[in-house]
Length: 265
Image 1: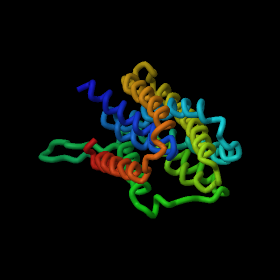
Image 2 (image 1 turned 180 degrees about the vertical axis):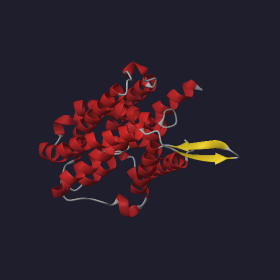
Image 3 (image 1 turned 90 degrees about the vertical axis):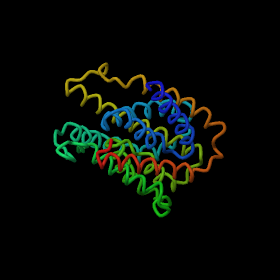
Image 4 (image 1 turned 60 degrees about the vertical axis):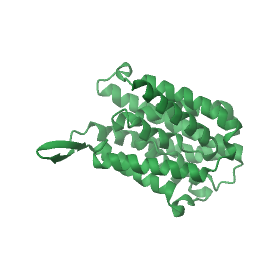
């Protein structure tokens, strides 16, 4: 059964990383519900951030030179600040002892924590961005880049969902495909670096040590699979229809989000 965990995480990271080469989003969106199957939701966010961050380091190394400096500064600086607040908010929810218990015949059958509720609702909300045509077509003018950074950074820190909003804001900036992908990678890397630092600080402040996190094997598996996905995606997957990918991601997001909100996970 343990081997199946590695297969599921590896395949999900491989395909998601390859497809996100051109969409600018999807790896974190897909990996969060996958990791939520194996870890508490707040730790699933951390595990997703580690894989997402490692993948962005790799993408920056091969595509970062194409990034548009103006876009990175206008969008990235506000995203970094907002990511700190988003990550702190996640820490507050994770530390809360309050919960809503659903009982049946005097037996608790599910426990809904604040972290599960918030992240679950966010996942359902972002599922709508993937599934509803009206939201899919959202695009924003270049002057709204700082606002886009705030929204994308905050939700990136809170739940890891930053790519879809970032791509929507960057789509109207007149960037070439290479500059779009490069700018996306650099900004995503900056946000990941920021939120991972906050997660580590919160984890350490709570008395934990990085060695105590038992998910490293799955994180490493996901990271290596994502690297392979990026290399394959760079060469072969640019012809994949992103509409079908977004639909699949949206369905998975909605299903896992509903499961978190209902206490099933």
